Amino acid sequence: MTVDLRSDTVTTPTPAMYEAMAAAELGDDVLGHDPTTERLEALAAETVGMEAALFVPSGTMGNQIALATHTRPGDSVLFEDDAHMLFYEAAAPAVFAGVQARTVPSDRGIVDPERVAARVLKRSEHTPGTTLLCLENTHNRAGGSATPVATHARLREVASEAGLKVHLDGARVFNAAVALGVPVREVTRHVDTVNFCLSKGLASPVGSVLCGPAAFIGEARFWRKRMGGGLRQSGLLAACGIVSLTQMVDRLAEDHRRAAALAEALSGLPGIRPVPPETNILMLDLDRPASEWQGALEERGVRTIPVAPHRLRLVFHKDVDDEGLEQAGRHIRELSDSGLV
Ligand SMILES: *Cc1c(COP(=O)(O)O)cnc(C)c1O
Image (cartoon, rainbow, N blue to C red; front, side):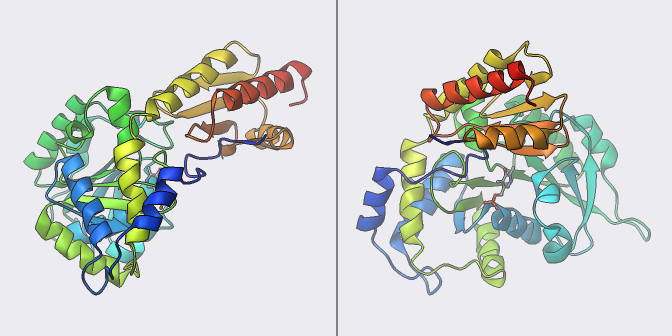
C-alpha cells in the first residue's frame, strides 16, 4: 500500500461527494445562476461569518483575486516572509495586482503585530503607500502553525490604525480552528476577507471559496472572470464543497493526532528531528539531504516532499489511516537504523 504524505490535496472524493454530484441541481454560473454553487457560497459565507462568498477554481486564484480587488497597482502590500502568496503563486502579485511586496518576519509563521506596524509605508512622492496586510493561517511553510485568535485581534488593531485592510490566506483555516478549539468564524473575525480551500484536508476534488463583504465579492466576481476562472456548471464541484463543509471539518482532528503521533514515534532517532506539529503538517529536519530520504522512502511506498535541502514535509489527510501512519513510521525507523540514508 502506498502512503501518500506529499500533501492533503491528494485525497479522493468521498462516496457522499459522488452522490452529491450526481444529484446536484445545475445552472450556468457565468450567465447567472447555478443553484448548487449559490448554496455553497451562502453556506461558506455563513460559516466564516461574512456577507458573501465566491467559488473559485483554486486557492491561488482566490488569493490573487483578493489581492487585485483590495489594491491598486503600485500599492505596497505586507506579507509574512515565507508566505504561500509570495513563495508558491508564480509571482502573481507582481503580474495581476501589480503590487510591491514588502515582507514581515515571523516566529514560525506567526506575525508579531509590532513588526507589522514598523513595516507600514506612508504614501509620499518617494514611497508607495501600504494598503493591505496578508496573513496565512495555518502557515504552510512554517509547518502548519496556527495563529491564535488573540494575535489576529491585535494584528487587526495595528492594521486599522495604519488604514490597512487584512486578507487571510486561510487555505487551511479549518485546521487552525480545530487546533485552536474554536469555531472557524472566531479565526476569521478579525480579517476583512478570507480564502479557504475545499481541496486541501476537506477532500473536495477542486475548489476554494473567497469570502468577504458583499461589495467586495461583487468586484471579485469581475476579477474572477478576467482571470478566466468563471465556471459554467460549477454546481457539480460546489456539491462536493457542501459535503466538505458539513461532513469533513471535525475529522481534521484525526489528521492532527496522526501527525503528532508520528513526531512522537520518531523523536530521539539519530539524524532526524521532528518539528512538533500543531496541525496536520509534520516537518522532519534531517542530517542527510532531504532528497535522499525522499528517494529511499518513495521506493518503500511512502511519498513525501522535500521543502528545503534538509527538510522533508509529511502531510496527513483522510486517505491516510492508522495503518498508513504505522507503515510510514516503520519505514523511516528502518532506514534510520540501517544507515541506508
Ligand atoms: C495550497 C495553498 C494555497 C493555494 O492553493 P491551490 O489550490 O493549490 O492554488 C494557498 N495558500 C496556502 C497556504 C496553501 O497551502
